[in-house]
Image 1 (cartoon, rainbow, N blue to C red):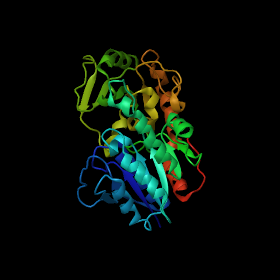
Image 2 (image 1 turned 45 degrees about the horizontal axis):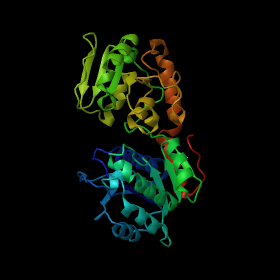
Image 3 (image 1 turned 90 degrees about the vertical axis):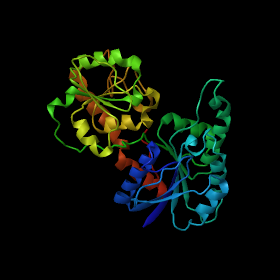
Image 4 (image 1 turned 90 degrees about the horizontal axis):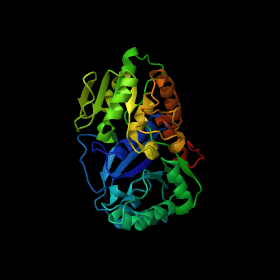
Length: 358
């Protein structure tokens, strides 16, 4: 039996996309590859898991190089690999976890050590000269380069991130696996019958919606003959007209997503189009074969997404295209779904060759 350790900022039930990603990945690695996971939470905040957890969960006693090295060294015989889920702000409030960079480097020098794999969920921040992100960006990049250079294998969720790692980080290996994120809300069942009224429903997550998009959303609902809008988030939905029925829920539990998307065949997202490959919400839209609408025309996006093929816009939306768009988007998703992603991780954990989604 193979055992691995995940290092990450937070674990469920904390609200954390990276925690959800790692937990679902661990389930698939266990069920499909007999690779068993433990978790080491090393973030700036901590939420105590309730009751007995599915996997062993530990908390790093101190966010320091010494604590990290001593913790892993004491257990290095237990794990074949350590997977670091890299999101700098999760480990240090300014996005400069020097302690982690130095600790990861020291682990790489440890004799008879586990294999070190880093998943870059994010890179560095950017901002105006008035922001701390602008002045700290050189240090953030230094941390990323240090971690990359002392890893045995690298992976990330965007081609642009992989290009930066190859061109700037100078890792000792040319292997940078690229796979957009999988859905954190499970995935559609293959061959499941879909009710006809599915295409009369539209899903909107408040966190990806700008109030200035209200007019465009109302118009696209008219063009697509939408009757129901499912609004998810704590923020109140905008006024979209009397002809639309709006259902507002604060949160969509993962176990309820399958039933939800059976009756909501369309989805709207105002998430930054350049970063859709790292959006768990967009991954859920793709996993459940929805026809996605973006607020503006964008043409060819990053990571292989193309207007008119995988998504549409308010000015081009047509009910006649919805099924085709939903199928194409699902086809884009399948090569990086949870099964393919787990197989890719399993190959890296065992040191076997692995190909990227891209």
